[in-house]
Image 1 (cartoon, helix red, strand yellow):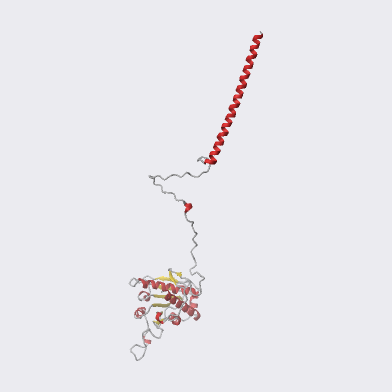
Image 2 (cartoon, rainbow, N blue to C red):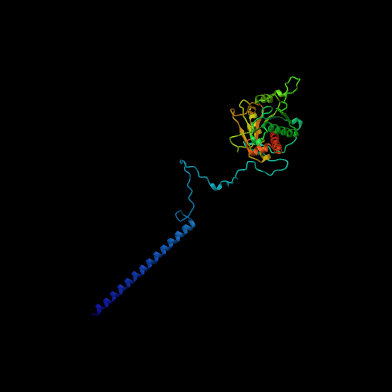
Length: 340
């Protein structure tokens, strides 16, 4: 009996030792797994921080080498391009005031874009003398347009007054001035009762055709005709107008000069009078006035104001306004001459 009891005790001890060994082995395996997991985490962190492999968060895109048989264009590195400079907004004021030295003003682009010099006007030397023909519109028995706003004064009288004032201003600057007429005489004609020419009271009209023939027969450089406009159907229409024409039968330089002269007259009138912005317009052949269509030198017809506009009519009747207008138009001619 004692032998059998001893064998049971031995077997019990053996089973307990085996169970303890299995538990120890499980603990060891668990520790090893934890160590392996920690090692893997450590390796992953090191790879992310040091090697920066793709797939571990933000990274630079790998450079893709260009293939010889691909149609894809090379990508430009924008970071190497020159910085873009902001372009200032274009000046919107029609006639900007610019600070300039007293001796000269900057070149300005007026209306059609033709440069007009802003240099001070000088008295021309006799060797530089230009010959300008001024044409007071209408005259003699042709009184021109009329309006009740003028109180009995006619257009021809106003045109002549402004033209004579322009003549005086141009002559002060050394320009030779010819007048198509002064309402008492016609350029190139001597009126004598006993001479070959008829007395002036027989000259009741000087039509545009005769004025063109007269101008083309003189050695002149420029031709400016002075008029007043009218628009009975629209009393609000007003301001100065400068008309020119580009005759295809004449040289291009003549036509371009006519445009430049019109722009210069309008520019000076605008600055000198500070009124409604003048209009510069190239008239087509079917609408062009005879004197700007068939005179061979640069020619412009100026409408200084509208006799059917109350404000314009009051100005046209004012001698001080007519003097200022004459000075402004003469200044436009002189500025054109200096820029030519």
